Image 1 (spheres, rainbow, N blue to C red):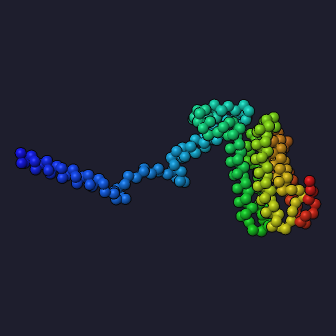
Image 2: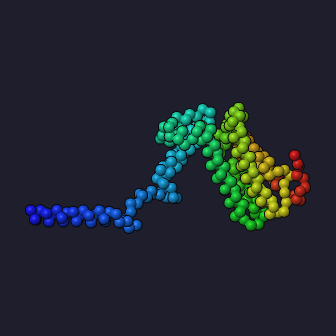
Image 3: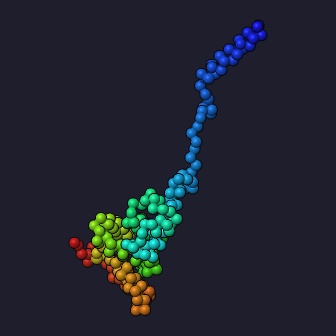
Length: 251
């Protein structure tokens, strides 16, 4: 009996000690930590990286389908399937066919603006800046990735007010960006041009697209070399150096 009583006393003592220990604050190192989310390259989470990869595949597929079938004939199912996904994956990333077109358009134009800015800022001499700007414009004839698609979409937008407003807004921002670069180059000369800089951007784009379309239609009559020469002549007609403030027409 004495042994059993001693054992009971020892058990009560251990329980009291355990209870007291549980009331003590835990050291910082022993507190439970939340699991850390591993980041992929570029500081993105794995989920964000998967989303980015899915979006990239959809954009690449859209570019192929638009070039193959045209904008209006292209189907969302074909774009999704071309990327290896379903319509659900498409709608998780883009609202509509117009939405993915604008994403492609923004990407393409962004690359063009960055390339153009890099070409002119590579030089410090004003004459070299202007020559680089001319060369960059003339060489546009090589880049036809979105020529037919964008021209078809313009016709589509003219018949659909919402798309028209959205495209017009994008074009105004783009022309303002190129216009700012034109102004930067001409300011290095201390000169200007006869028309507003955004208008010059619109004119240069319209002439280049029209000539490239005609060359694609009948390359025997209008060669790529002919297109380059005409683009150069048209560029010169706008950017011939003239005194500051002279000859510019105001609206």
